[in-house]
Amino acid sequence: MTMKHPPLKPFDEALAELLARATPLPGRDSVATWDADGRVLAADAVSPLHVPPQDNSAMDGYALRCADVPAAGTVLRVAQRIAAGSSGQPLQPGTAARIFTGAPVPPGADAVVMQEDCEALPESGDGAPASAQVPTLGRVRIHTVPEPGQAIRRAGEDIARGAVVLHAGTRLTPAALGLAASIGMDKLQVVQRPRVALFSTGDELVMPGELPPERMPPGAIYNSNRFFLRALLQRLGCHVTDLGIVPDEREATVAALRTASTQHDVILTSGGVSVGEEDHVKPAVQALGRLDLWQIAIKPGKPFAYGQIDAAAPGGAAGGAADGGSGQRGPTHFIGLPGNPVSSLVTFLLLVRPFLLRLQGVADVLPRFIGATAHFDWRKADKRREFLRVRRNDQGSLELFANQGSGVLTSTVWADGIVDVPPGQTIAHGDVVRYLPFAELMA
Image (cartoon, rainbow, N blue to C red; front, side, top):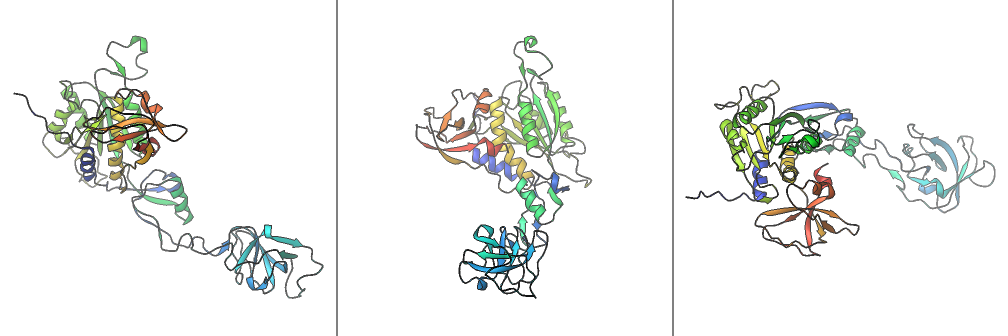
């Protein structure tokens, strides 16, 4: 009697289930703002001041009263000079202040005229009357009639005192670090880095450098997955422990999982999650915990698995993952990726990446597809949801890599993104398709 396999889980359902289990990590780190790029903010950043702190000039020019310049060509006496970092005196009627970008606008001034619309004049000659009470730095002719507020950046127009400038859950970018620095924050509270144990399974795997190509035995391949997975994990801010290659043996797989669960939040494996006789990851996880998700309806990447290893369960790892001294923690997350390199890369980008971001408290983790025009035909409708490797041409249309096999890693270097093909659909040249750039997924 033939055993019936349960239907494959649709991609959206699998992703939703995965994210539902990604409870944000409780630990926090205090890091220097210098070093916080890529980290996730654990607490709102609230501004203790206005930015800018006072009204200041948006350009080099002259600060003045609009009432003193009723017509183009008016000449005013220059009574003071205000550079950035200094402050001026109240502006007396009938005078102007030479002012520079970023300098505080003196009390009484209600406009700044850029220097290109002004003409510096010698002290003598026709123009504004001299006054013994008003010091002079020369005179200036204003060639335009100013409007109130012209070229003045108002206090707090960028950030008001008490405003939240960065919300908890924000993944910090270089611009965000600059914003934090602009309100005086030299340290930031960030979510702790996920501790990820990484290992591959497969007797056929050889690490580059162990054997030269001419000495590789039949059936052996270099372990490429380990390199791109480690790099992607580090880009996501994870602490990575590389546990190497585990032999295709159940006992060895159980031992590796047990060891990894003692000090890590997540175990990520590559290979061994399919249905072959040498695929030992599934029974090993079930021996130590449970498997909640196994095989999803996508191509490439069907043999994807998620489960948990419960340190407190019989047969589980003694003590569980490190908890920062609290003495309590939940199960260790297990994620098993397919062994084929393209399948491993695609499932990491579409499923593991949002999971790890959610562990760090990021709310918006779903991939953002954009519309683009197909410069190819795809007539091979599949019952699974497909992700095709493509790249944009000079006209902005998408070209298809010729070989879409799950072992063709060259396609992922040639491509700059993937196209989402719903189950049972084809693509005709000129169709608008859902395109997801690698640049966003690998940031």
